[in-house]
Length: 107
Image (cartoon, rainbow, N blue to C red; front, side, top):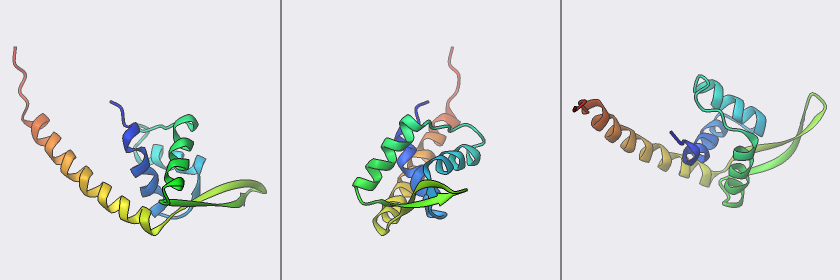
Protein backbone atom coordinates (compact mmCIF):
# COMPACT_ATOMS: atom_id res chain seq x y z
CA UNK A 1 0.00 0.00 0.00
CA UNK A 2 1.13 3.55 -0.67
CA UNK A 3 1.11 5.69 2.47
CA UNK A 4 2.90 8.64 0.87
CA UNK A 5 -0.26 10.75 1.04
CA UNK A 6 -0.35 10.33 4.81
CA UNK A 7 3.19 11.62 5.33
CA UNK A 8 2.25 15.29 5.95
CA UNK A 9 -0.20 14.21 8.67
CA UNK A 10 2.40 11.92 10.22
CA UNK A 11 4.96 14.74 10.23
CA UNK A 12 2.47 17.09 11.89
CA UNK A 13 1.66 14.43 14.49
CA UNK A 14 5.34 13.94 15.22
CA UNK A 15 5.89 17.69 15.59
CA UNK A 16 2.81 18.02 17.80
CA UNK A 17 4.92 16.10 20.35
CA UNK A 18 7.64 18.78 20.16
CA UNK A 19 10.17 20.35 17.76
CA UNK A 20 12.49 17.97 15.94
CA UNK A 21 14.87 17.63 13.01
CA UNK A 22 14.16 15.61 9.87
CA UNK A 23 16.06 12.45 10.75
CA UNK A 24 14.44 12.27 14.19
CA UNK A 25 10.98 12.82 12.65
CA UNK A 26 11.56 9.90 10.26
CA UNK A 27 12.83 7.69 13.10
CA UNK A 28 9.85 8.61 15.29
CA UNK A 29 7.39 7.64 12.54
CA UNK A 30 9.27 4.39 11.89
CA UNK A 31 9.45 3.52 15.58
CA UNK A 32 5.82 4.37 16.37
CA UNK A 33 4.67 2.29 13.37
CA UNK A 34 6.87 -0.64 14.47
CA UNK A 35 8.88 -0.32 11.26
CA UNK A 36 5.93 -0.43 8.86
CA UNK A 37 6.29 3.22 7.83
CA UNK A 38 9.85 3.99 6.81
CA UNK A 39 10.11 7.21 4.81
CA UNK A 40 13.42 8.02 3.16
CA UNK A 41 14.99 11.48 2.85
CA UNK A 42 13.86 11.82 -0.76
CA UNK A 43 10.26 11.63 0.42
CA UNK A 44 10.53 13.28 3.84
CA UNK A 45 12.29 16.54 3.04
CA UNK A 46 10.04 17.59 0.13
CA UNK A 47 7.04 17.02 2.44
CA UNK A 48 8.68 19.14 5.17
CA UNK A 49 9.38 21.95 2.68
CA UNK A 50 5.79 21.83 1.39
CA UNK A 51 4.38 22.00 4.93
CA UNK A 52 6.70 24.92 5.69
CA UNK A 53 5.73 26.77 2.50
CA UNK A 54 2.07 26.36 3.44
CA UNK A 55 2.73 27.79 6.92
CA UNK A 56 1.90 24.57 8.77
CA UNK A 57 5.39 24.21 10.22
CA UNK A 58 8.32 26.54 10.68
CA UNK A 59 12.02 25.81 10.81
CA UNK A 60 14.95 27.22 12.74
CA UNK A 61 18.65 26.49 13.13
CA UNK A 62 19.83 24.47 16.08
CA UNK A 63 22.58 22.04 17.03
CA UNK A 64 22.78 18.49 18.28
CA UNK A 65 26.08 17.02 19.46
CA UNK A 66 27.81 20.16 18.14
CA UNK A 67 26.38 19.51 14.66
CA UNK A 68 24.17 22.12 13.01
CA UNK A 69 20.61 20.92 12.43
CA UNK A 70 17.45 22.40 10.95
CA UNK A 71 14.64 21.92 13.42
CA UNK A 72 10.93 22.08 12.65
CA UNK A 73 7.97 22.96 14.85
CA UNK A 74 4.26 22.88 14.21
CA UNK A 75 2.36 26.17 13.86
CA UNK A 76 -1.17 27.07 14.88
CA UNK A 77 -2.41 26.43 11.34
CA UNK A 78 -0.53 23.12 11.38
CA UNK A 79 -2.39 22.10 14.54
CA UNK A 80 -5.69 22.96 12.86
CA UNK A 81 -4.75 20.93 9.79
CA UNK A 82 -3.72 18.00 11.99
CA UNK A 83 -7.09 18.03 13.76
CA UNK A 84 -8.85 18.01 10.37
CA UNK A 85 -6.61 15.22 9.08
CA UNK A 86 -7.25 13.12 12.21
CA UNK A 87 -11.01 13.41 11.77
CA UNK A 88 -10.81 12.50 8.07
CA UNK A 89 -8.54 9.54 8.82
CA UNK A 90 -10.92 8.21 11.48
CA UNK A 91 -13.84 8.35 9.06
CA UNK A 92 -11.91 6.69 6.23
CA UNK A 93 -10.35 4.09 8.51
CA UNK A 94 -13.73 3.14 10.00
CA UNK A 95 -15.31 2.84 6.55
CA UNK A 96 -12.50 0.65 5.19
CA UNK A 97 -12.55 -1.51 8.33
CA UNK A 98 -16.28 -2.09 7.92
CA UNK A 99 -15.87 -3.05 4.28
CA UNK A 100 -12.78 -5.23 4.67
CA UNK A 101 -13.93 -6.66 7.96
CA UNK A 102 -17.15 -7.83 6.34
CA UNK A 103 -15.53 -9.00 3.11
CA UNK A 104 -16.03 -12.66 2.45
CA UNK A 105 -13.92 -14.65 0.04
CA UNK A 106 -16.04 -15.54 -2.96
CA UNK A 107 -14.83 -18.29 -5.29
